[in-house]
Image (cartoon, rainbow, N blue to C red; front, side, top):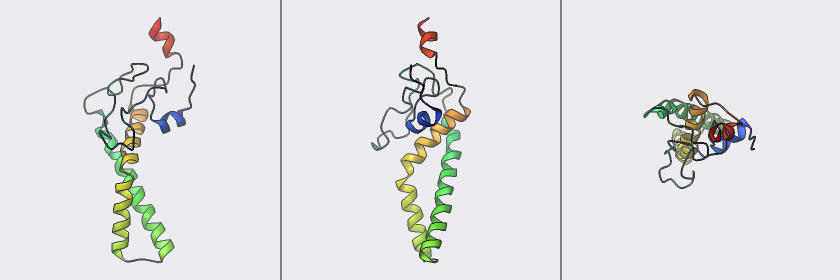
Length: 131
């Protein structure tokens, strides 16, 4: 029996019910179908998409990530380079957002599924599905 912690399961993008199966069918660096999610967990068969447009709410989390990046980049640039030109701010914010898009897309969906999904961790899921 695998008792993976909540933080590790979220970090690895695992199913909230069994914390073993993957939520995403492709890797983060593939950029091919980056935001696709399995309909059911490949390990425990839990439904990961309870309704057709369930993950639209994850856009708000992704937006919050993007705002956090903008604020942090602005503070860091202002602190390190003593108020650079506006084009430096804009270019740095654009590049950092584009580079971090895979992380923002994936983890916004993971956080949304763990936070608002109806699945909760069940360490005994194997016994319930076999019995």
